[in-house]
Length: 210
Image (cartoon, rainbow, N blue to C red; front, side, top):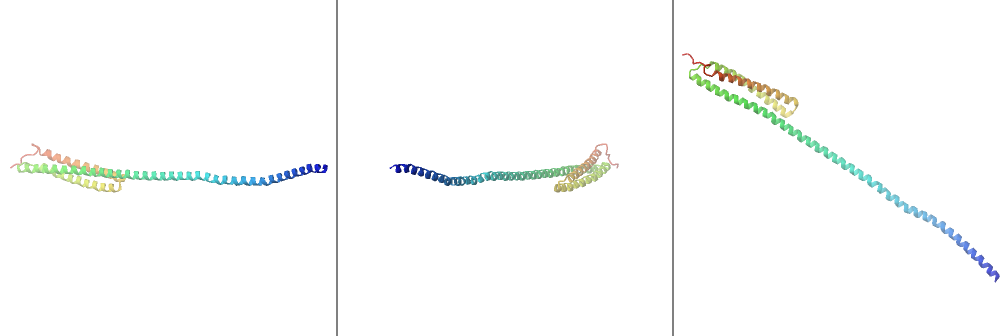
């Protein structure tokens, strides 16, 4: 009996030692598994982080592209507006140039009408026996000046046509110069007709001697 009692504590100690050793072995086996699990769980975190950094880059590119398209669109709008303004200015210049010709031609018609009236008056006085030599001479001078004025107007028309096609500063300057020249000639012709009219006043022309 004493031997049996002595062996029981020894067996219990041996069993406890085996359990301790088994526990250590289990702990060592469990450690790599835990490390592997940590690595396994960490990997998806890295995989998920990549798209997170890529999305902002894609968004910035899209915004930059959108801004570029907007800038390009604005440039096209500005070009279109400039073209429209140039066309309006060109049309306005053409209208102004044509108005210059119209005014000159209107004055030439006025002079022609005045010439017809003066010649009619001279013819009437001549039938009454009035000496109209002076008036006739002045009318002849006026006719030459009227012809010069009409030639100058035709030159203005030519210059206007060129300026309407080219719309350059030089061509418009030439129109201005030609128009001033025509205006001066018209005034000279009108002054000659006024002299003819004044010669028809009583006392300036006398009755032809019989």
